[in-house]
Image (tube, rainbow, N blue to C red; front, side):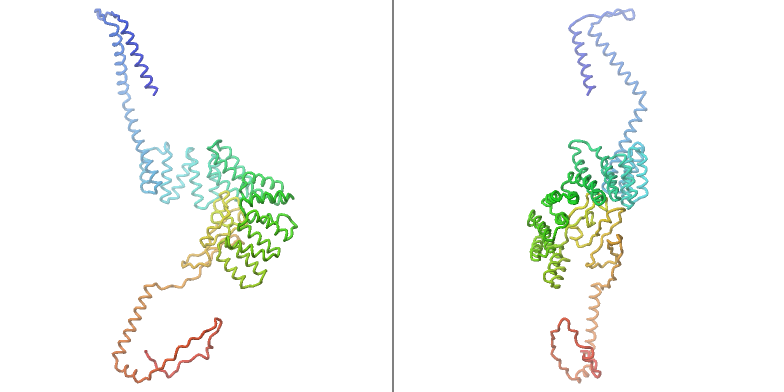
Length: 567
């Protein structure tokens, strides 16, 4: 653009100059080779401009002739580079589409046309090709080569982190993520991996320091609003974990962390619960109850109800029932409110109220806890063991209750991170997916969520029948280990085709025997000599379910003198 403007300025200046000369006529006289020449001023100016233009054109031609080898070399090099980038682009697209053969072919072609030192994306294409073909050793080597280059070091660290995570080498994956987080704290995958590992190891303070380092890299304004909200939520989760950990050892630190966590994320139920427990422990009964009531109005939760009812020591069962009814009045027609009143009434001996509340809970949500509660009420009120077993049988078939669930793992209490992936705030209060599909999920207690993570396998439902010989697994919550359970041997089942074939052969044999009897006159004569046997009417006896039947010694014995008859 600047050159165009400069060219227009020069042309305009020349035009103005020639116009100025045209308005002022004059002659130019000069002597050359003994001859005197007289020309106009306009002609002289035109000759000067033409001479300058010819000199510039001649200089350009000479310069290009001198530089022609370099120009040709640069042209071919640019053409080769363009072909290399085209191959690289095609290879990356093929790798993304899952075409390993095309990606490998384009990778070789790009390596010939481009220099690996100048274009690091070739290593990325090689790594993607090795990943598609399953060459793990080559894949790891490519990522290590990326680490040696400062431009691709973060890419290599992420690749090694993902490979270590796939192989289950959690310590190596943590080392790669920690190095990447140190270099670039703004990397979300690296900081999240470091946070999860530190939380699972019980280092909450270290996780908070990583979170603070990441906070400094978040931009202000609308661009960083989502990141700041996520950072605030993660900080609330870590503070909640810190408050729960120091609840019995450091009351002041626990109260401070719980209060800050509740202010940062009021909708986080564990944060509100630990903050209310701190208030109740310090004697601020009214303040703690008010906080629990606020959370209960927003989302009824059984742990909130338990803390509210048993918050004040020394209350009688009737006092707890009164508090349960007051709490239930804040969220009428909710299943948790009905269950809270039913449990408190059962403890207080108000069995009629307990039954009414439990039946109301069954009408709104027929689930396992409601049936188990009805079994307890039935045993306390009537003592009818038959009815108790009936309620228990319905509890087995009923839908499961909500629980703290994260990545297929059901925990007895909330935890700050998932024991499977290390993701923060992964536990959700919902019905486990395995409960809806019929499979059993591993259940962890509070001790299993701390320290080094143990791999968890999903267990099969023992009530289901599996025809495979693969070993099933169950999770032992007492010893926190995986126990292999060999399946019972399955009886071989004959294929349907074989059964039909055997039946057909049997029918053919019967038809053959019948033809032989019909065609044999001796057998026919012997059959005519035998007296016809009178058939006794078939008498059906109505047997009692527990009837042992006829003793073996009183059964009718076959007569020895009776001859064999085919029909």
